[in-house]
Image (tube, rainbow, N blue to C red; front, side):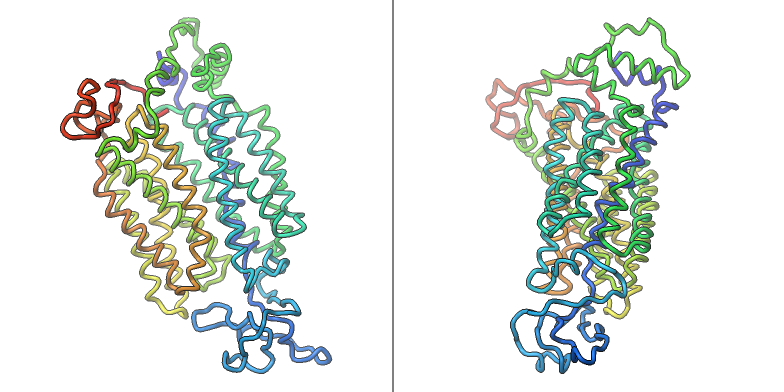
Length: 539
């Protein structure tokens, strides 16, 4: 029997799996902290050059409200002389501020912006720093994905937790912006190490019927972290203390050395049957379904038997043939645009004009129903669910550009609807893409898709540099990109309640002929081995 059949015997979602999900879900809260904390630590308060003070002899409070322009953003603050008027014609095009900056402390005691003066000429450094952090996720996905396949899920999760706590705490004591960015980059790599392998570890221990539900459970905990962060940031207004508060508890995860189990599926696939058998016996006992010697290890046919079949394919097979190429490119774009817009909205909540802490909490609350509704729509139609939620998210974002700045509540509600649609779409694409790619190249397809998603994350903070072109440009992008994705989804197949494709031939609907030196019916000229694979599953 294979491992899925073993799970049927010992329990696919018993006490063992439920405890396992507790262990892998709790870190998701801290992942949300690190992913979204820059909303507060990198916030830009209203600021004014010190030379604008009326007089050192008669100091008076600075009126930061005069810095608000027509679009609701700080205006005129990048000039050295503002002691007479807020009229641009009276200010003059003077040189940069020579005396340093003063910042409003109405909302924040300190941020990295106020500490290192990341405004005006240096304002882009703030966005670049966020992009470098997101690039850390891309590097982490590539590096730790490979290491996890080689050394196992558990050990990489432990390494990721150690990196996150160590470098997260170190970031709270960074002496300058460049050291801070480097430390945050390392935290970003740990995010990928944890989030990917925790999801895989849970999936590899869960029965087929419960996998979709189990995957959604981990997403809920990320949403909890989203909401909790709003409260923490409200209570802790100093960026160093906030960074320390979200990082230091990470050292408590050292107990995972003793409680986090190994993946029996991975151990079997790597010919470590005795270790796998020990963990399987423990899981069976904990689930109240002890097994006897009738399940001998010689009966277990593991993934290594399928390795020769998978090794005959590469990522190039994703684009060799017409139908596979079309579907692959569409799926890659969907991953890219989902992550681009998700973090584009999540990291720039101050743009909507409402209280930043309240907006953060609302955006976090939206995560819950958005992920829940997919449980009901996915079984009906993957295709319609994907395109509908993309259309809802894109349309809502696009509508915000027509709402005046003073109607901040309406703009926030529309942004919330946009966030709802994109969050639901992001949950669906995980399941949908795994069913679009055939078994023989599924891992390659998911891997490339994940890389495209990370590029979306890298570009999300940079997207708001387009405000120099037009204040509406970021939201136009957040609207049009999902709408394009919705239209492209029409070209994907429906996969709900249908057997998974095993080979590229299943996708193309024809036989690929090596003897003909290519593919029949005018497909790609690239020769492919005629292989039939059955029941390899998604793992």
